[in-house]
Length: 462
Image 1: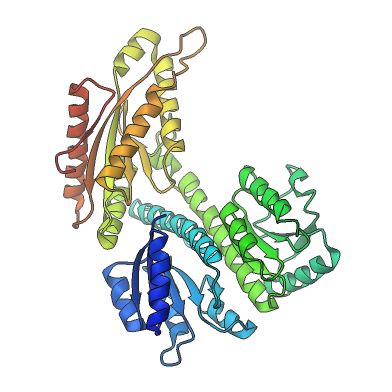
Image 2 (image 1 turned 120 degrees about the vertical axis):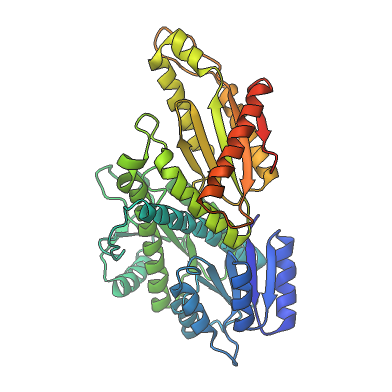
């Protein structure tokens, strides 16, 4: 588990206990007692998530949370409110101030860690959106931003009429959107022509047999291509932290107890709709706004025009977080001989298949581009030298272990690639230095070629 956690609590004992738990979960941890100290730590090294006690009587920590969420540089930091009174008013105030979740004491450790993992997944997606948007603006593709909640759809999955009626009334009151009632046993048999809801609210109050029915339903919704991107809000019986933790790890975006106040349910549902439409915007930006100008028509990968401004964004983020990033150059070994022997159509199939393998075996935040005839670039944020070497060798093996289809009446062919890797990011890099880093990776690539091909070489700097 990776990530940096900031703990903000006036009580030293609370800070120590929570810090020990977070360190045991393999997080990097900072802790402080006031908002001023928190601001200094955030400026020094931005955390991925903040655990904050909002009930301090001395300073207004709700205002602190609001400022975090309103400031573009810190808006993506996830916030969990801990220590507030477990009342509807206190919970609503924390969520309204910008907290992503509220966990009153005593805190269940399994649920806390599951919630942290869930929120970090969301934050990674938001970081990707920020990178893509920044690159789009650098290329002149910025559009006027619109409000998200324009035509969202919500489905309530419930087999319990009484509970379903109450949940539906609460949702429609606070969302001012129609809520479609669906039997949870039939949701997976929906027609392909039926619009996919942006938010599924799943009533798990009747699934008391160990939660297994809920587990299957969430797994199915997350695994199917048409529903995997929808937000999932699960309603469980009160005081079921172990089931709630597993539900979050299976892919639910949020979990609440059935006795949740109407206002809190509305706030959580609105946040999840916003999150879903945020992801839609990300995909549309990449697919529609940039495709024609910055993608390679054969492979669908980004081209050289996209690389330079996006690398600049990655470098700026690396410098601000003090986390290195890696640049890899990959070149197909003996590619000319493939074209000469089997024809250019066969060579094109090799290029397309290599692109597919790269794209499907890297993180969504990683950059994959075709920058030459048979040369590819991979940029990996938050990646140190050791991690880059392991990743590069894994990509190299992905190419050589499975033969490539060249076309009808042609044999399957084993294809290898050579990889050169450079590391940077701890110091500020301008355009010239980023280009120099790419040259370092290119030089390492030639070292790999000269060493016999089908190899990985690290640059001298790395």
